[in-house]
Image (cartoon, rainbow, N blue to C red; front, top):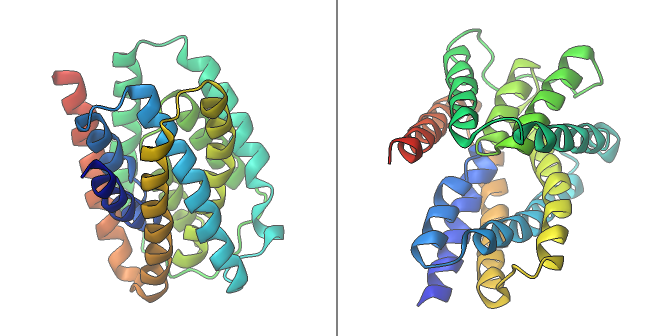
Length: 244
C-alpha cells in the first residue's frame, strides 16, 4: 500500500511543483507519516526531483520552449548561492531560518499584487544585474532553507517579463541543477531507501510530464492566483511547524 501511496504522491506533488513550486508541501509530510526517516525522505525527494526535473526540462527543450543557451548559466549561480546558503545556515537557529523564510514568502505574496505582469511577457532570460542578483538570492535561500524556492523563482521570472512556459522550463533546469548534487550526496551517505524512492520517482516522472502539458495549456492569467495559494500554504506550513 505504501508503494501505491508514494507513486500517487509523486504524481500530485510534482504536477503542482511543476506548475507553481511547493511540491515538497505534499511529498515530505506524507513520507514522514509513512514512517520514513527524515534524511531518507529528503533524499528520496532529491533523487526523484533530479530525475523528474530533467525529464520535464528535456521535454520543453525538445519542444523548443527553451534553449540551453538561455538556461545554462543559471546552474553556476544557483550552485554558488546554494553553497553560500549552506554556510550561512550554520549561523542561524531553525526558528530564525523559519522567520526569514516567512518574511521572504510574505514579500513575494504581497508584491504579486503589484504590477500588471501576468506571465504573458515575451522576454528571454539574460544576464543582467537584476536577474543574477535575484537568482543568487534564491540560491542562497534554497541552500539555507529551501521550501518555496521554485515559487520564488517563478515570481522573479514574472517580474522579468518572461512567459509562463519558459519560466517553468527555467525553474525545472535550476531544480535539476541543485538536486543532482544533493541527490549524489544522499546516495553515497547510504540514506536512500531504494524501493520507496523508486516508487516516488516513477510518480514524479509522470507528474512532471502532466505538469508540463497543463502548463502549456494554462491561461497565464490563472498562474498568479495558483502561485498565491501555494505561497500562502507554504507560509502556513512553516509557521505551523514552529508553533507545534
